[in-house]
Image (cartoon, rainbow, N blue to C red; front, side):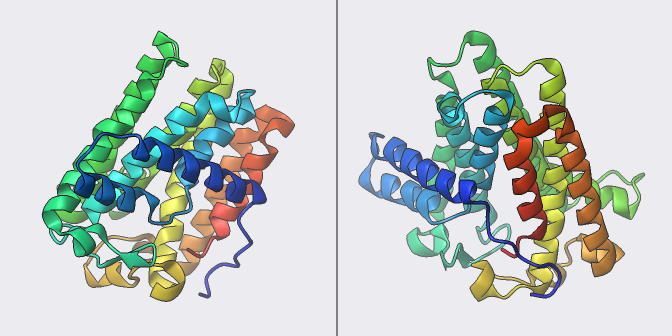
Length: 297
């Protein structure tokens, strides 16, 4: 991997990932499901992963003055949506991937029918987390609206990326950004906004978190494009080099590697600037932002 140096993940992310893993496992274990469906859903969710999105929900809540407990159900909801999307994206009809997080994808392990159904299950499970009684009625409504919108946009982005249909009046760069902001950016921005909602953020703080989420959401996908171009499957944990072969539109493909790196740096600066209104409360998010800009997997 040559495009970016790779600082270690923030210690807090490692700690949070362990807590998130425990919560995910306990909530799945408690479900009354057929054994084969529970096994497949658990495999889809617990098959490794950095837990970036739920960690952002928790950290954004903390930056506004809330606690991790305040935001945990929302964090779990975000991760269920993310895992549902991965299971379906990996299917032969879409990205046709055999490897995810260094292990066989769910349809390889359990068959396409079970992969479809396990992915389907994770979608309502996500929204059921938002009915938690610790959220008041206004929070439940806002969380549901934000997550539903982001999930819809994620699906739209995947359609654009896989099946086309982008508006003709957009330039190639505008089309590329439209794909990325929907396919990847929408759920990351949503994860941040949900954390702010869980902390009952005032408008100015919510807007800061939303702007931060928008910048890192696009940045995350550009870094993914670079990783796909340069990373090895062994290091990344999934097949790489597929985007170009599939004719997908990527930042390196449109503007080149060096300009893509510049775009990452600019978005990193935008994200950090957005957090400035939160002062020292956002220090962990600033560190998280730096790591996401330089990650290699």
